[in-house]
Length: 133
Image (cartoon, rainbow, N blue to C red; front, side, top):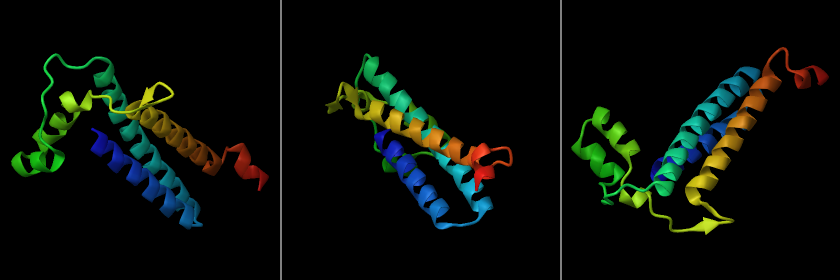
């Protein structure tokens, strides 16, 4: 799950960079939607991992890695396997101010989602900030 969170974070960063590099309103709106989707997905995965850390499974097993699953199973079986979680997803290796990496990832993805919504609101015709400029 932490690998999936990394891919979601890279997606948010890539979409944000492409959106910032463009000067067109359509690209800003499309980029904000893509940022929002990646942030929601990342927040969902981080919330699931946080839940696994708070309520670890009774039997902790080491699951296959992401690439091993893709090579061994069809995609429709891999996606549910990713979100099932395993013993290693429930392990807490590091904390900062009482929060695990998954907790902090959830907070960051939520902030990215709020910023994407703010960007969408600014680009809307009824957005107050867009009428100022």
